[in-house]
View 1 (cartoon, rainbow, N blue to C red):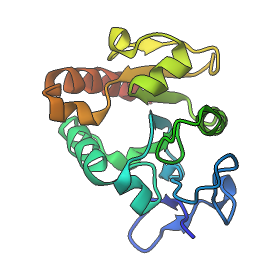
View 2 (view 1 turned 30 degrees about the vertical axis):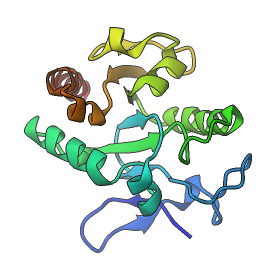
View 3 (view 1 turned 60 degrees about the vertical axis):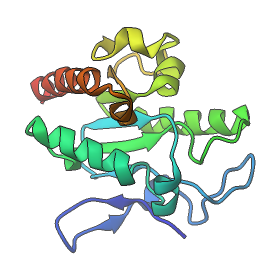
View 4 (view 1 turned 135 degrees about the vertical axis):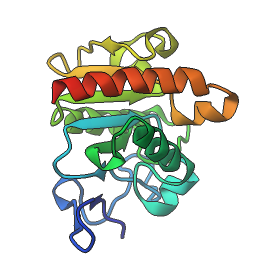
Length: 185
């Protein structure tokens, strides 16, 4: 069984049990290759990514591997820490084409997002589901969502765009968002 982890001081980590049941399976397709939200218990901003990939499934958390490495590096370049943020995904397992699985994950994501004053949408699916608009048109900008009307929401390209040569767009958007986040707190 996988558990989400609240990042704390070394040796002071604890399971994030209040969000998830002991046995995690998709209620629609039954897969147990699921990820859970990840982050510090006292963060004020939530990154919402589209879906987990193999590294995330292996670790059981919403970010891992190259995506976690990129975010850690880019946030530290902006004089921040990845520990200041929480992370989740729309799909709670690798997409299988079943829209009911996606919709269940989206409902859980909205429920969780309601606990944060700031949301950062990373990727096409997350952005289009929350704001019903094309994400490229809103990269680096604050947007509104009918699902979270009282929440500050920002749009940022997915970290994997760096592999396709999108370094400038990603860094510019993330930098603008981090400046906005710092101003809020």
